[in-house]
Image (cartoon, rainbow, N blue to C red; front, side, top):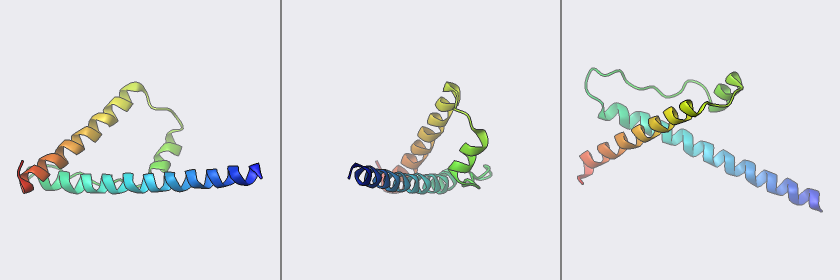
Length: 93
């Protein structure tokens, strides 16, 4: 019985991870759209990724350095700031 319980728990974890990744892709897509909408004319538009996250991970086969992690966090917060500015421009503060 324990094997069935473990298998069921693993399946639920995999479904949860799939849902989380789907949300991550949607977040990134919306961030690209909002960033391009809010950017100044003539600025180079941001592009949505051209391959899945796991493909990038498999290619690198390495753990990110602390500096790379901080850079990715900064990008995420930059995208969130752009989304907030765009929202405030369209809806007021």
